[in-house]
Length: 135
Image 1: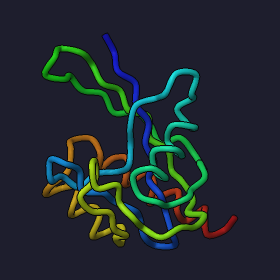
Image 2: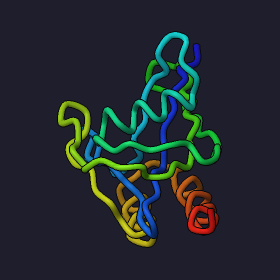
Image 3: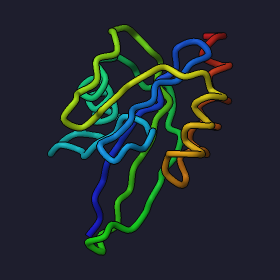
Image 4: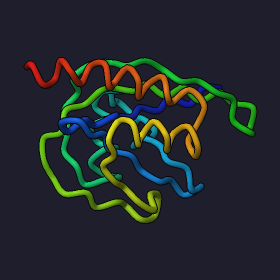
């Protein structure tokens, strides 16, 4: 069985939004798709629910897949997102901390206390962020 999730890398200028999950790892807001919900809709909802930040989808970044302890596969579709507003207010039941990081600092956090495969998503979001500034 495959579990589908979606998440967003929210960009604000030269910064990206990271969360610290309940396992103490730095990551991106993400979560399961609700019935009838698209991955894009889920990514926008999850960012708002987990961080209090409003964002819009700019581009699909790619997908990360891995095996769960149950033997199921989890697939997460990530999107580059533009910050639209809101103050960072993490949902403490799932997120212990949410913070803006420079891309370099975010890359270091993901490298030292993140998840495999997420550095690629961050690199792609950084590449796209130059386009955001021109739009």
